[in-house]
Length: 626
Image (cartoon, rainbow, N blue to C red; front, side, top):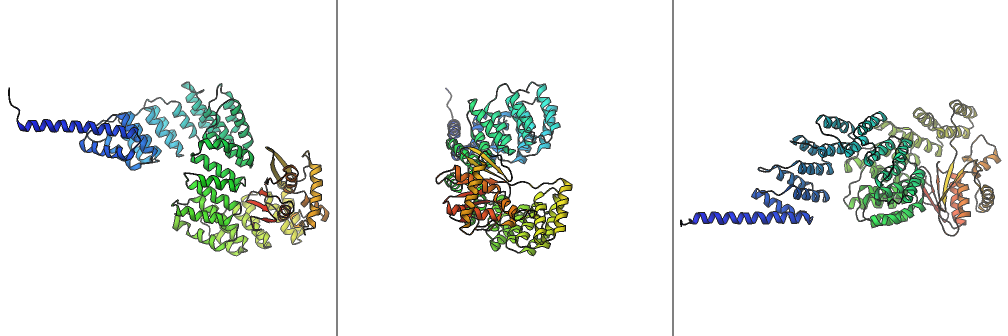
């Protein structure tokens, strides 16, 4: 028998050692991947790289899932480099996993490069890219990729068509894509139908969306979420809530998407009590960031600041939307110092403010008259946060200067704006001119508003009243004639109040409410009581084409007064009276609400288009600065 040399023995031993070591490392890597231990899995992969060994595609895909879950971009790039190293040919399945990873990381350039390098692309490859472009609002590219996909001989599936439909920007392209889906028998597919509902909703074609929904033989939760979300996003909260009730009657469970849409519907309708009921269902998804953000937003916009702050404080995860929503909530509800303190806490938490955050901060400064602080934040936003001032930021500062009586500075800033001022900007200046009785500038501002929005009834009325205050009756007649010639009518004041889960509406001059007789009687009695506290109707807020007693009666019948009295009659005990109105609250109704809160020992919250007023013990959260 031939003897084996010592050199050969060493080589065999070394070979067995590396074989054993390689097997052990591969086992470790697999175990760490399935344990979701990304740190140790990465270490094992580095050892595999050194030994030039690889594992199977399924294990790599598990590691990629760990990278996505942990937002581990660098580790994701490492595995990409590793699987393309010498001696390994990654399968299409694995490359698709990497493609999906880059899309989830919003690294579309890297995804495109990888896609272009793929030797073979299947329906998953194409659909991943089309979906990415659609989600990124790169709609032209999404549609172009569909054409390239078909030319490449790859047949689109239901996921492809659902992504492409959402990229459509007009009804003609919607119909073309849906026709293609019909040709391959996907017209009844739930994903395609859901996307069709989404795109119709995006285009404001809600009845088309509802027809598609009602035509379906069977609905699943995806389709229910699409139709409810469509109406909620288009501010049709009533229909969204009605569909939610239908969904529950059909025995479908609400998920995070459903509840987010329902909360949005509650927000648009100021239905705080309904929102609180939805909150009960949110608890099971306690760690869902988007849902918690929607909950904070609902409470803020329904005037439930304490509830909003409790939810915000308890959130385990907060993003810039969470902070911005709470800051804006404090600001709009008149809690300026709380808004600014929270902004400081946000910066201390190393959360970078965004465009909306700064709008909330400037709004807070504007409605508290903090001119110097507001100017500081406005002038430093570009330098500190890299945010260019937009119309909303300029609007807040112009409003701040106007309220403070710095009208010349406000006009100068308007002319220096880097973006074209819109009607909202000029309306802010117009309102300030009325408060500070600068008639000439008010006329100029009103003319600018009407150039941009010739149908704005509020500006005509305000201009008419400014002329009337100066006894310029010919000008009053000219403005009223212009309104008549254009068919423009004053938008009637309207207030809504929720009582026992039902919305009651009050409109100036409308006596259709079933309890209006009792409401008017109680209102007259209440006004007589308030006169003992120094209240007298301020007819400056009435139409100037009415006579004395008519002016006083007009002021008495303002919709928020009727809603407040109905609230006092219907909501007994210590319950807060919450009202939403379509027009900015006038000075007379503001004083009325303050005095009622004092003598009736009730909290009254009124939400107008600009802000929220919390009346308690004879004072308002706005500090009479609105």
